[in-house]
Image (cartoon, rainbow, N blue to C red; front, side, top):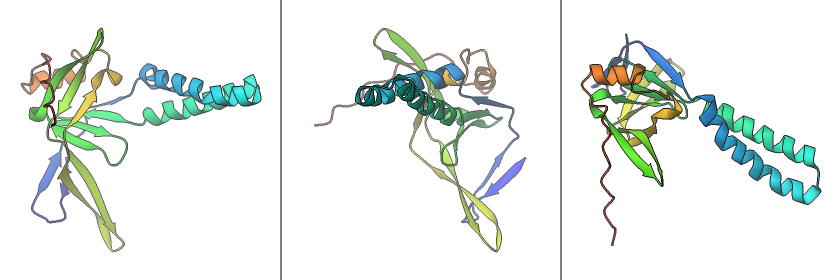
Length: 179
Protein backbone atom coordinates (compact mmCIF):
# COMPACT_ATOMS: atom_id res chain seq x y z
CA UNK A 1 0.00 0.00 0.00
CA UNK A 2 1.12 3.51 -0.64
CA UNK A 3 -0.25 6.58 1.01
CA UNK A 4 -0.34 10.01 -0.56
CA UNK A 5 -0.79 13.10 1.55
CA UNK A 6 -2.30 16.30 0.22
CA UNK A 7 -0.62 19.68 0.55
CA UNK A 8 -3.04 20.81 3.23
CA UNK A 9 -2.25 17.70 5.27
CA UNK A 10 -5.91 16.96 6.00
CA UNK A 11 -6.64 14.30 3.41
CA UNK A 12 -4.95 10.93 3.03
CA UNK A 13 -5.71 8.80 0.01
CA UNK A 14 -4.51 5.23 0.26
CA UNK A 15 -4.46 3.07 -2.87
CA UNK A 16 -3.80 -0.64 -2.98
CA UNK A 17 -1.40 -2.31 -5.34
CA UNK A 18 -2.41 -2.54 -8.98
CA UNK A 19 -4.08 -5.81 -9.91
CA UNK A 20 -4.23 -5.44 -13.68
CA UNK A 21 -3.08 -2.81 -16.17
CA UNK A 22 -4.85 -2.65 -19.53
CA UNK A 23 -3.41 -0.68 -22.45
CA UNK A 24 -5.22 0.48 -25.56
CA UNK A 25 -5.45 -2.41 -28.03
CA UNK A 26 -3.56 -2.03 -31.31
CA UNK A 27 -6.59 -2.13 -33.61
CA UNK A 28 -8.43 0.85 -32.05
CA UNK A 29 -5.11 2.69 -31.90
CA UNK A 30 -4.32 2.12 -35.58
CA UNK A 31 -7.69 2.87 -37.25
CA UNK A 32 -7.68 6.61 -36.55
CA UNK A 33 -4.03 6.71 -37.57
CA UNK A 34 -4.82 5.21 -40.97
CA UNK A 35 -7.22 8.10 -41.51
CA UNK A 36 -4.59 10.58 -40.35
CA UNK A 37 -2.08 9.02 -42.75
CA UNK A 38 -4.43 9.32 -45.72
CA UNK A 39 -5.46 12.89 -44.89
CA UNK A 40 -1.84 13.96 -44.30
CA UNK A 41 -0.57 12.27 -47.46
CA UNK A 42 -3.21 13.64 -49.86
CA UNK A 43 -2.13 17.34 -50.03
CA UNK A 44 1.53 16.38 -50.26
CA UNK A 45 0.74 13.96 -53.10
CA UNK A 46 -1.29 16.45 -55.10
CA UNK A 47 1.28 19.21 -54.75
CA UNK A 48 4.39 17.22 -55.60
CA UNK A 49 3.14 14.04 -57.25
CA UNK A 50 5.59 11.90 -55.31
CA UNK A 51 3.72 8.78 -54.24
CA UNK A 52 6.44 7.25 -52.09
CA UNK A 53 7.27 10.42 -50.19
CA UNK A 54 3.65 11.26 -49.44
CA UNK A 55 2.92 7.70 -48.30
CA UNK A 56 6.01 7.68 -46.05
CA UNK A 57 4.96 11.02 -44.56
CA UNK A 58 1.42 9.80 -43.87
CA UNK A 59 2.57 6.49 -42.38
CA UNK A 60 5.06 8.21 -40.08
CA UNK A 61 2.31 10.50 -38.74
CA UNK A 62 0.01 7.48 -38.32
CA UNK A 63 2.59 5.45 -36.40
CA UNK A 64 3.37 8.42 -34.15
CA UNK A 65 -0.33 8.76 -33.37
CA UNK A 66 -0.73 5.04 -32.63
CA UNK A 67 2.23 4.97 -30.28
CA UNK A 68 0.93 8.08 -28.51
CA UNK A 69 -2.53 6.61 -27.99
CA UNK A 70 -1.07 3.33 -26.70
CA UNK A 71 0.54 5.21 -23.81
CA UNK A 72 -2.79 5.57 -22.00
CA UNK A 73 -3.78 2.76 -19.64
CA UNK A 74 -6.44 1.65 -17.19
CA UNK A 75 -5.33 0.08 -13.91
CA UNK A 76 -7.83 -2.09 -12.02
CA UNK A 77 -7.42 -1.74 -8.23
CA UNK A 78 -9.41 -2.81 -5.19
CA UNK A 79 -10.80 0.69 -4.69
CA UNK A 80 -11.56 1.63 -8.30
CA UNK A 81 -10.08 2.46 -11.70
CA UNK A 82 -6.94 4.50 -12.23
CA UNK A 83 -6.80 5.92 -15.76
CA UNK A 84 -3.21 6.79 -16.58
CA UNK A 85 -1.57 8.61 -19.42
CA UNK A 86 -1.68 12.23 -20.32
CA UNK A 87 -1.31 14.71 -17.48
CA UNK A 88 -0.97 12.69 -14.28
CA UNK A 89 -3.96 10.41 -14.70
CA UNK A 90 -7.10 10.25 -12.59
CA UNK A 91 -8.83 7.85 -10.21
CA UNK A 92 -12.50 6.94 -9.69
CA UNK A 93 -14.03 4.71 -6.99
CA UNK A 94 -16.22 1.76 -7.97
CA UNK A 95 -19.29 3.33 -6.35
CA UNK A 96 -18.98 6.32 -8.73
CA UNK A 97 -18.89 4.27 -11.97
CA UNK A 98 -21.93 3.51 -14.14
CA UNK A 99 -22.26 1.81 -17.54
CA UNK A 100 -23.89 3.87 -20.32
CA UNK A 101 -24.98 2.69 -23.76
CA UNK A 102 -24.59 5.32 -26.47
CA UNK A 103 -26.19 5.01 -29.89
CA UNK A 104 -24.27 6.23 -32.95
CA UNK A 105 -26.49 5.61 -35.95
CA UNK A 106 -26.90 1.85 -36.32
CA UNK A 107 -24.05 1.19 -33.88
CA UNK A 108 -24.15 1.18 -30.10
CA UNK A 109 -21.22 1.20 -27.72
CA UNK A 110 -20.77 0.93 -23.98
CA UNK A 111 -19.07 3.69 -22.04
CA UNK A 112 -18.08 3.80 -18.41
CA UNK A 113 -19.36 7.01 -16.84
CA UNK A 114 -16.91 8.17 -14.15
CA UNK A 115 -19.07 10.48 -12.04
CA UNK A 116 -16.62 11.94 -9.48
CA UNK A 117 -13.02 11.28 -10.53
CA UNK A 118 -10.05 12.87 -8.78
CA UNK A 119 -6.78 13.88 -10.45
CA UNK A 120 -3.36 13.49 -8.89
CA UNK A 121 -1.22 16.60 -8.78
CA UNK A 122 2.44 16.58 -7.82
CA UNK A 123 4.22 19.49 -6.23
CA UNK A 124 7.92 19.19 -5.72
CA UNK A 125 10.56 21.36 -4.22
CA UNK A 126 14.31 21.05 -4.07
CA UNK A 127 14.50 20.55 -0.31
CA UNK A 128 12.17 17.59 0.16
CA UNK A 129 10.25 14.78 -1.47
CA UNK A 130 7.39 15.61 -3.84
CA UNK A 131 3.94 16.08 -2.35
CA UNK A 132 0.85 14.54 -3.93
CA UNK A 133 -2.61 16.03 -3.76
CA UNK A 134 -5.89 14.68 -5.11
CA UNK A 135 -8.36 17.21 -6.52
CA UNK A 136 -11.82 16.57 -7.97
CA UNK A 137 -12.34 17.06 -11.71
CA UNK A 138 -15.44 17.01 -13.91
CA UNK A 139 -17.08 13.70 -14.79
CA UNK A 140 -15.60 11.68 -17.67
CA UNK A 141 -16.70 9.01 -20.10
CA UNK A 142 -14.36 6.15 -20.87
CA UNK A 143 -14.80 4.04 -24.01
CA UNK A 144 -13.90 0.78 -22.36
CA UNK A 145 -13.69 -1.46 -25.45
CA UNK A 146 -10.53 0.39 -26.47
CA UNK A 147 -8.83 -1.39 -23.58
CA UNK A 148 -10.67 -4.73 -23.37
CA UNK A 149 -13.04 -6.12 -26.00
CA UNK A 150 -14.78 -8.51 -23.62
CA UNK A 151 -14.69 -6.19 -20.62
CA UNK A 152 -17.80 -7.64 -18.95
CA UNK A 153 -16.07 -11.00 -18.41
CA UNK A 154 -12.58 -9.56 -17.99
CA UNK A 155 -10.87 -7.99 -14.97
CA UNK A 156 -12.95 -4.79 -15.09
CA UNK A 157 -16.29 -6.63 -15.17
CA UNK A 158 -15.18 -8.99 -12.39
CA UNK A 159 -14.10 -6.09 -10.17
CA UNK A 160 -17.31 -4.15 -10.85
CA UNK A 161 -19.44 -7.20 -9.99
CA UNK A 162 -17.43 -7.86 -6.82
CA UNK A 163 -18.07 -4.29 -5.64
CA UNK A 164 -21.80 -4.33 -6.45
CA UNK A 165 -21.74 -2.18 -9.58
CA UNK A 166 -24.32 -3.20 -12.17
CA UNK A 167 -23.06 -4.22 -15.62
CA UNK A 168 -26.44 -3.46 -17.19
CA UNK A 169 -26.09 -0.47 -19.49
CA UNK A 170 -28.39 2.49 -18.99
CA UNK A 171 -29.43 4.88 -21.74
CA UNK A 172 -28.33 8.41 -20.83
CA UNK A 173 -30.99 11.08 -20.55
CA UNK A 174 -30.94 13.70 -23.27
CA UNK A 175 -29.15 16.95 -22.50
CA UNK A 176 -31.44 19.86 -21.55
CA UNK A 177 -31.98 22.41 -24.28
CA UNK A 178 -30.22 25.72 -23.72
CA UNK A 179 -32.31 28.80 -24.47
